[in-house]
Image (tube, rainbow, N blue to C red; front, side, top):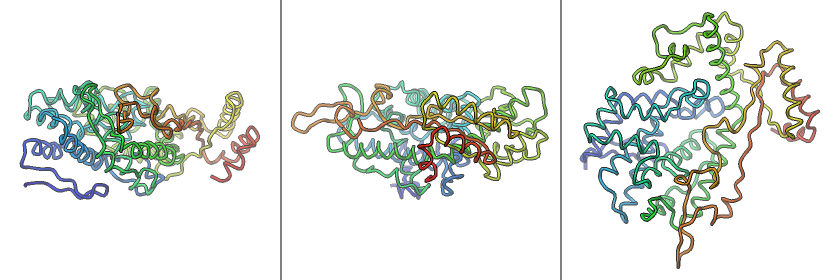
Length: 438
């Protein structure tokens, strides 16, 4: 058997077979410049400001997702017939699901208003990208099939659910990978038993978990919940993202006002800052280094706000943060008074007083049937003698007990920390001991 081997910290050995048409396609997609670009985009963005080991890339994650898709399809293929063309489309979609991701995309998308899924579809459908040409050379229908999986429109829907749902190979990989690379052990769960328990409900065209896998899926959902609380919602990470958003918003505003902001001339990032539309090839030119290089240059900006924010970001002198655990009426009074404190200290609240809410996070930190789309819900087999396939929260008390983690937080310069902490403790004295322990 001819194969290419990747050593991986999560899965140990990832094999790409080169003696099959599907394997040849996957290998060529990995070698395509659009996919190689993912080496230059960090999977966790600014998490390295908190967890110094979180340097892993979207390239490594995407390879892991392909590896898991291959394993899951092999397992499902033991008891279900999966067409070769459907298998190829599912594997390609798993590999390419992040190919349109931009630099620090969850921050950039919020400021600039675009979404990486749309870019991923454009990359796959484009006749100008190597990825698009490779997909088309395998099958003229393959680009559209891959795009439909990514958009959640593909049939059989069960295969699309493996790429994007509440229990998909994307989440399966990133929980384990992010947990390993950050050193936070909350994301560990029994991957092997989940793969072993996956089945296809052919009558309803959906993935479900055999009864023996229920506890493993409960563990997976709890791992996801705690990873959000301890890693993805970490106050230092969110503070770094708040500073980055303020930098980008300040640069955009200065340009809109016709003021001077240094940009590398003729580059796609200059067009981004000027809110000009990008072509697919221009979008794919950008990676993390473009954003970081401009912020490094803005440390010399004549604008005091852009200058200061860029220096804070580069030197990791981030904002402080405080979680607001108080009634809504008191919260409004506190926010108004704290904003005035920031302004009196000489900082523009628009850039130096940032409210951070859970709704800002682009994916759910918990699972309930109410927030999961019907096609994204998790279904499990209930019972052994006369099994029924039911939505998991109907079966699992542990899942029903998962509560949404409400993130209500404000970020502000450390120079006003003492004043704002004192204000907060006067408004909510019961939180004094809690915050002191953090």
